[in-house]
Amino acid sequence: DAKTTQPNSMESNEEEPVHLPCNHSTISGTDYIHWYRQLPSQGPEYVIHGLTSNVNNRMASLAIAEDRKSSTLILHRATLRDAAVYYCILSGANYGGSQGNLIFGKGTKLSVKP
Amino acid sequence: KAGVTQTPRYLIKTRGQQVTLSCSPISGHRSVSWYQQTPGQGLQFLFEYFSETQRNKGNFPGRFSGRQFSNSRSEMNVSTLELGDSALYLCASSYRDSGTDTQYFGPGTRLTVL
Image 1 (cartoon, rainbow over the protein chains, first blue to last red):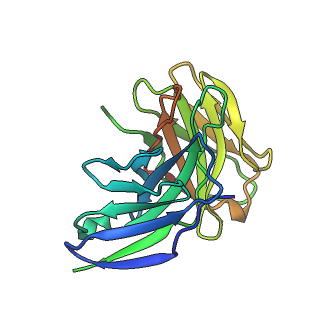
Image 2 (image 1 turned 90 degrees about the horizontal axis):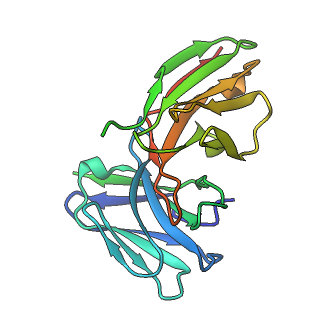
């Protein structure tokens, strides 16, 4: 099972910020929170990940709740190219002995209106 | 660096045939994972190979198999194809070192079984 809960779909207007929520109430202390997105007709691509602190990169920001039971992916200015399915995934650390696979849920389909 | 490449991109087979799909990981990546994506089941993990050894396997029948070569390139094979095997098959590579790990996906091979 995916262990995360996301809304099925969201809409945004171009050049406005988008906040994509994710609930992960069963997260363990060593689980990282990863976000991937899949554009139409492409394979998934990495967006961002974090453990406890908020994270920023050139694509997005990740805000993690203090209790780590939820997180929010923030796209600061949505573009048409950001229309995709966004997946929030929990992934364990210490890959030397753990599973090297991602468990994808249904994700959130983001539509961006011009 | 070149990304993950998959060949062929599209494939049409008939029931009962077998098929081999190929994946070339990003240079330096030692782990290759395979996923199946269908409209009904979403993205599902098939198996992971690391240094020519299968490290992890998803819940798929034995008709699905794979292998990894010494140069980290990987192949997956599906024997006795069924209509339900029609899907997008995605390959992802990663360093597979300690700590969290980002997976980089290829564009996928679209398999149609008639």
